[in-house]
Amino acid sequence: MKVVQHSKLASIVAGVLAVCSANVQAQSSSHVTMYGVFDVGLGTFSRSNTVDKRLTKINIDTNSSSIWGLRGSEDLGGGLKAEFGLEAALDPKSGNATGTATSGANTNATMTGVLWRRSSWVGLKGNFGSLHFGRDYTATILAQLVNGSGMPNFAINSSTANIAFAQGIGNDFWNSNMIRYDSPVFGGFSVGLQYALGEVASDSSAGRGFGGVVNYANGPFKVGVSYQKNNGVGVNANDNVHYWILTGSYDIGNFRISALYDEVKNKGNAIPLGWIDSKAWLIGGNYAFSPLVRVGLQYGEVKDTIGDTKSKHALVTAQYSLSKRTYLFANFANAKNGNIAIQPLWGGAPGVTQQTVKNDSINGFAMGVVHRF
Image (cartoon, rainbow, N blue to C red):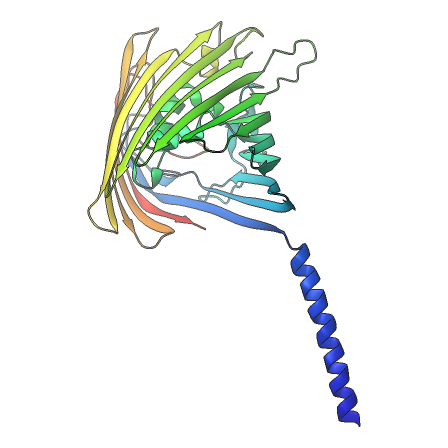
């Protein structure tokens, strides 16, 4: 009799657990993912910006920025999802998880001690596309830097980001107080738009930024054009800067080639804050000699349109894949600079400007490892 009772009790418990499990699965329409990148190596440079002597250091972010973040979404039904994103900078040299970055169109201040300085947004995604509110990458920049890079694994830090940073466009990788919209793809076309509110009570246009990108992809070919205008980025409230970027890429088999052209123009006194009237172009490519080995080359020039000087940048890189998430790299670069100082290789923050030297040549070599999780 006891055996029968125990058997009935076990059946009841199993039934209750099954019902609870079904309810949990029905309600578990949301998920959160942690992700990150570590880019660390040993770097040596022919000189620094203060001393004409060799600088050897642990170099971070040579190819990709070291970061960690959280992404999440919830299925709301009817094809609609709620989303959020949080992303922080990471300095593997010291364990510092904050770093520094300019805050974008809305203010000239440098963001120091802000954990989620790269992304902090919430939004919705559906058949209409996606809509984000908060601090985020601008649609104007990220897709263009990726498309314009000819480096393996889209290593933009030592390629397209190096050029953009030197011109001042690095001030605009992210914007605070922003509304960003990304469309679905229609016939190969897609659009990204953003609007950053200045939030100045006395002048609704002060500190405001707006822009967007149009992309077209057809098989291995992709082209993109973007435009951005920021108000109040100079000494005076009516100072502004605007720039546009054109990129193209072609991927086929083991080969990729890409190119970028841009132009930055100031109105007023924005130059002291890092925006330089300039034009830039670059071309690059990479080739896979085997499934594990890729080699990339790139060359670019930036012309200071006020001082009429040119800065030139050349880069060669080799990567060896250990897995889908991990690769070894070796980069060598030369920057022959005029009034605009380009880093030969990205050096990471803090101390990101150690390798920027005006009106002089500087070489850089780094080798290390990149791991993504």
